[in-house]
Length: 151
Image (tube, rainbow, N blue to C red; front, side):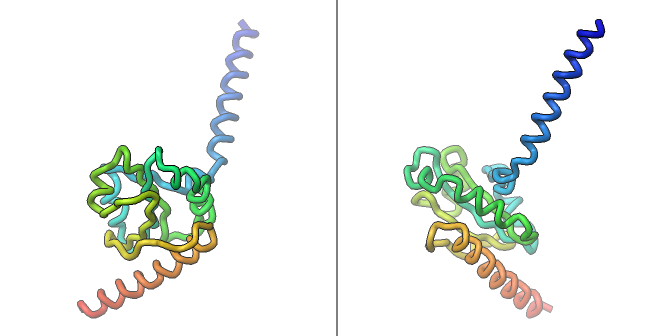
């Protein structure tokens, strides 16, 4: 019976170790998968920018991005007002139709629920990060000016 307990403890230990190790792999965790059910609520978060990649699993150009989007998510980890998201247009067609996606991959920045701009620059982490930071600052400033003029 003691041996049996020891085996259970070993299994529990390994399970906990696996769980903790998988939690520390944060590269993927920084990109939030958006779906038809969650997209509107997420991108409408007040004073928050969402930089979103729209793609489909079969797209050669999407596959060629490799870990670019996950790397960007990890790089943007400390930016509280900017979230990195992705939408699989294959399984979330209503979202992609609503935001006028016709080619893959497409990258768009949203602020307070409004589409701000479509990204068309270089496909590297530094360019994407710079774009997201600059466009978010512009959108936040515009939003603040709009709010001030309403008062």
